[in-house]
Length: 427
Image 1 (cartoon, rainbow, N blue to C red):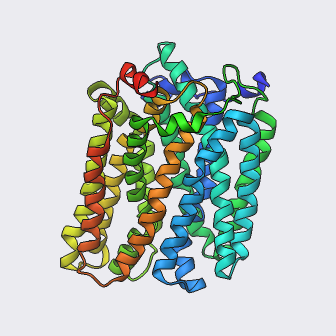
Image 2 (image 1 turned 180 degrees about the horizontal axis):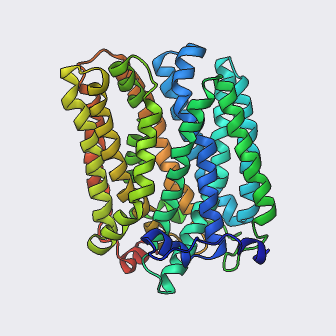
Image 3 (image 1 turned 120 degrees about the vertical axis):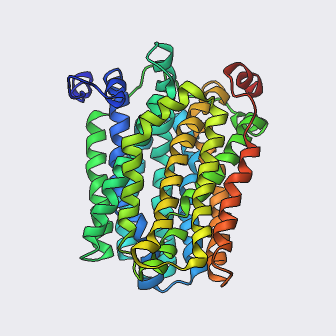
């Protein structure tokens, strides 16, 4: 098993980038998990960016229902992360990843053939729950391994988590381009191609994933949920991160509406998703290194949330001009760039914060809970946003409301994220 994993090696070059230097010092397991994130997102993003248009046009759903289905998909994923995290703590990483991959294959195949509203809802629930299994497994183990990596003197744990984000966004870059090509056939073809990617991921992990990961014990003690609910610092982090995720979810709801208004179609949507992913792939590690030298975790998240708010404000400021064509896409591109810059600060900082706030042996549960609270916020917020976009309000109003949410969330961030203070809060 070790020999197989050790084959995942970095390429050598005379002048190594920060990404290559970080990759060089990773364990074979960390490399496998990071490549797993890449593969997950290729399959996922070949389908999801085009789901809203499919539901509204091919299925004929109203705007509020489209928003509800998208929110339900996010909630069944993010909202049930806490269940997946608890299962990972109890049964280990490998079985949960394998079951999650199998469910994602079934969900994509079902979605490709679903026509009735109930069938679409069933398919997106399966798709979401699949991620609620394998994502907490991968993310919690990467976070745990990143702490070990930091303790061994390789540098800040946020660098490992930034590499995880960069790998995920590389998949998010390739996925929409693949999906855009497959949509030239039809939506069903895109869904089946996404399922095929997860077939390959499942086969790879059956072969490469260790049966037992050293240092990760299974926890069968009760009472973890009660301690979590009393952890005010952690819950505050969850709420602040949830507002970021609600903002990010507008890539699938508000952004398609803006692109449709500006150009009369959604053909440019794939390119905007590609722009976001390419920014993360190229800039995530440099941004993380910069933030790690100058900012603590709280300040990093605060600046990230303000950048996200600025992205919505850019579209709100330009909306009254009613620009169309290429010029009309500029505000949308500005929103994507600012949202992505905010994401590069918020996501690694939030993930790096969790191990300091988590109870011993419960990192899966706490990693899952971070996403579950966020998923609840997205479920409520997405339905409200879908209705907001359909109300016929002045063009800038929905985007101003969206800008206010992450800006106000800065006040929710817990104070003084130093490890000693966090340990006291968890106790």
